[in-house]
Length: 438
Image (cartoon, rainbow, N blue to C red; front, side, top):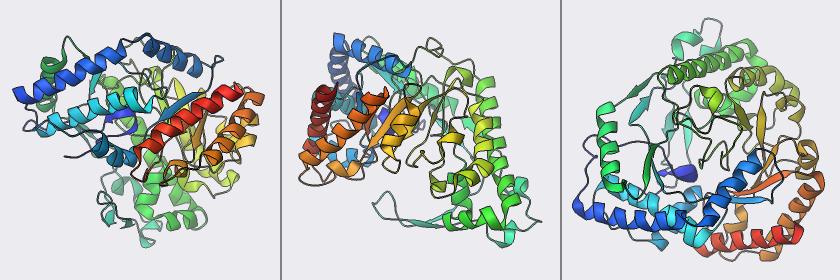
């Protein structure tokens, strides 16, 4: 069984083949019992209150700070300790795992993630992306560190290198037969208990420097700002052209799905908002949804160089979306004067690499302050509660003083030291510190 196939707020990252789209009576009965438990939690008045809390928060109304946790690889340590898979079919096992994660949120984690009486399924689709692959060395799924061989060499960066011939425009194809097969099964299993809806990520974010680093290597990329500046602009421009073509294709074929509800957006947090067309079951265009942009790979590049090489292309992409989220692990305080020019920027990542008090002052009450709490706080066998409290208290105090719309996001967890209780205790500590300050 593949455990963490529903990353980032329980979004399935893949569909299932026609051969995998089977459901036995045994598995159906197990899934229906779990769905009934989930529906009971979703019916609680506090779940609708949580949804409204997120809506007000993202619409820049005054709320208390919110708490959101997504364990990423930490789920692979938590899940085996919290449930034993009963289903037998491969697809049914993944659905069972999805439901259990929701129940763990409701029963054990108890952060501000709402529980809904919904079951989300993706398309069975393939995206060719840039048409060229890096050679990965190491087994990331086996927990190994990796490196890679980048396909664009220095020799290829000379003037005769045809960027458009080498880097292709992404092409999306959908296996409709498989998609309709498991969609019908989902309705058969969950109708009358949970609402079945489609939710699909065609990409995580509109990344520019990540694929650049993949194709050139991270160290090579940093030299390219000086050595191959014109060719670097060509490559970043090609990525931008590809994303814009992909957006056009998804709009024309009504393939976007909403991320304006109880859906993970950007690099952490939920996208619930009343300032976009949340009622649209199928977004009319990208103007109905959130866009996400970041450039972690250029964290140590000067703000001016970032503004010259990366920002112009991000601006073109951000212009297509109704609201935008910016940033991931990079510290944004040094480049904020440039980043703030993104159109309709609403949610901003404040990572451990940022000057956090300075970001409080810069963001004020004009943006959502998405604070990425250090995952090392819960990555040790015995957590240091005093240390956790001190750090949270300082951040919350600064945020209150500056009128920030703040959320505390625990993510990027490569390990939780095989201690699920670390997760549950951290949420309780965060609640207690919020109560003290607010």
